[in-house]
Length: 424
Image (tube, rainbow, N blue to C red):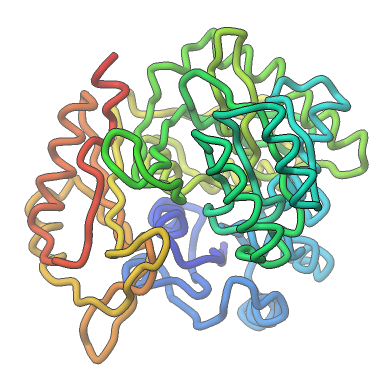
């Protein structure tokens, strides 16, 4: 089977690494890929959002199956375009990807079908939004409605912070069209968890649990990011919690989407808050999480490709996956200035020696490129160092030992990934 993975980040590197090991994979390509992915797949210089370019390449190279990594091409209808041309693709249609493409759409769906989530209101007028915030008080959450690369959510501790976030989106146009509307919602108290399920539109298969770290600084301080690290399994997601999430959130969502004429296929990523009243949905993503995908792929014992194919082909019912019992933990190394203004172009050295120091630790590339023969940072989140071990503490120790061997003065990382599991 000839497979094309779309994307260039750490998630896509992890997917390529896992798919390359599949007995079904005869040839693997990645568009556009990155220098790390090039070790597992043939990289082709086509942007993930170049829908026509990806389709033309898939037709020319007789690609059998396309796995779409990032959200932007999903929302833009890449899967629709490929399927219409007779090319099998993993991921939701544009109509189904609205679960991530519009937070307002998701909140309205939850309200209509009694799916537990935070109380909310939608606004396009800054004055009305601020009036609502003042009436509700803080803490409160302000979200840009559309795709904002993980930067459109503000957990405001004060009314002033919430009003500033409203101005960022609705007045200053910081997020462009993605911020033309905001969702203002109740601040939920509890422990966050990432929950993933493969679905073929009807059946759903829960994947291993994970927990990520959204804030940029140790101790969960500073602005939200796309994710600074993750680990799996998440002790807070017990078998009982998993059953409740499937029963009250995942399956009702799939039924609702089918009823709305938007059947959902692919991986459904539910960001959860485990509250005293039970699990509640924070938001949906229409793809694997990043960096959660990295720890899931490390823990997955089964061949990933048949599972992705079963999701696309509508034969997921009865499918099962096997997982390693060990803990996988991933630390994100980011460029100086991330998330607001990451500095690109700084040299990264010592990766080969760092990787060789512990062959069981994987270094996934997230935002790198080769410039004049030198590996350099080319994004906000740049490297993902992932380890697997019997305990969270050991996995964390191994990951940081490799990080300490990487020569990149302009890079930084959180030093407390996994702290909730260790505290518990």
